[in-house]
Image (cartoon, rainbow, N blue to C red; front, top):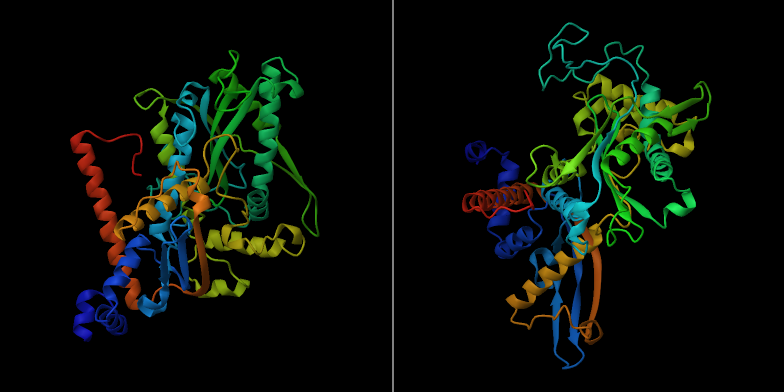
Length: 466
C-alpha cells in the first residue's frame, strides 16, 4: 500500500480512502455529481426531497437524496477565490467576463450600440507609504539589485522601520469610500465640461462603470475600471454630441485629484487625509480588431482575471484569523505581509467601527472586489439564472420530459415545486478530494482542447477563454 501511495503521490491513508470511494456502489453517481459541480473543491452537501408538479396535467416528478451516495446531493460552493476553489472561480471569472463584455459590445439585454459610446479603461492607484523594492526603467532598484519578475522581494519595504504600515492598511480600509467620492466628483466634472448643472446632467447623460480591485505586491489595493458615457436613458440611448473620450479622460483626472477621505485621529494615531496616488492611467478602449488601443476583449479578460483573486500576490492568508498569534503557525508568511496584518490588529482598538482585525487577512480591505453601476450591463444573478435554466432544460431532456417553453408566460403559473432541503455538510474526504481534483483537471483540459480547436477552425469569438 505504501509503495502504491508513493507512486500515485499521496499518503497511504488518502489512497485507502480513494479505493473506498472508487469501490463503493454509488461511485458512478458520485462522479456525476462532481462533474456537475465542475469539479468543485469544497462542495456543499444537501439532504431532502422535491416534487415538481404540472398543474395542467397533474403529472409530477419526484426527487429525493435518499438514493444519492451517502444520501446527499453535492452542489458547487460558488467561491470566487481561485485559491479556495479553482473550479468555481473559473465559473465566476467567466460570468464576470460576460458581464463586462456586455457593457462593452452589447448582449445579455444590452444593445450593441454601447460599443459606439465614449469608453476608457482607467487605473487608480494608492499613494506611496514608503520606498519599496521595484523594477524601475533604469533596471536597478534603489537597493542596487536588478530584480527579476518573480523576485519575492518586489513590493516589500526597503526600510520596514520607516514604512507607514498603518497608513497602508487604513488606505485599504477606506478605498471603497474613496472610490465613491471619486464617482461623485466624476459626474460633477463631466457636467461642468459639458456646460451643465449637476441637476440638469441627468437629463442629458449617464455615467456607467464596471470595476475590479487588484492588490499590488506592496499590499495596497488599486482599482481598474471601465467608464462609459451613455445618453439620459442609459445604454439604450446615444451619448450626447459633446461626450468624447478626451472629455472623459480629462474629467477622470480632475475627479481623482479632488477626491479625498478624511480619517480622524484616534489614540496615538494622528488624523490624516487619504487620496489617490499620482500614478493614474486612462486609456481609450478600441474595437476588437483595433490594434492601436486597448481592445474590448483584452479589457474583459483582464478584469475577469482579477475578479477571482484577493491579496494572494502579497502572500497573505485566504481565510480570516481569529487572533494574531495564529500567524505563528504560518512561518511562510512574508515579513512585509505579516507587518501589514499586525498593523490591522494594532489599529483595531482605536478604530473599532472599521473592523480592521476582522479584515486583517485582506490587509484591511473590506470592499467588494467587483462592482458596477446598475445600468452598466446585466447582473451576475441574471447570468447564474440563465445557466440554471439551461441546466434544468438539460435535466428534463435526460429524463425524457418535455422542454419548458421559456417564452411561455404560463410556465411559471402551471409548474409547482414543493421542496424541503437541509444543510448536511461541506467538502470532500481526502480521497474524494484527490479524485475530484482529477475530474476538475480533466474538465479544464477539455476546455483548453475545445478552445484550441475553435482557434484552428477560425471560429473563435469575443468570448475569449469563456
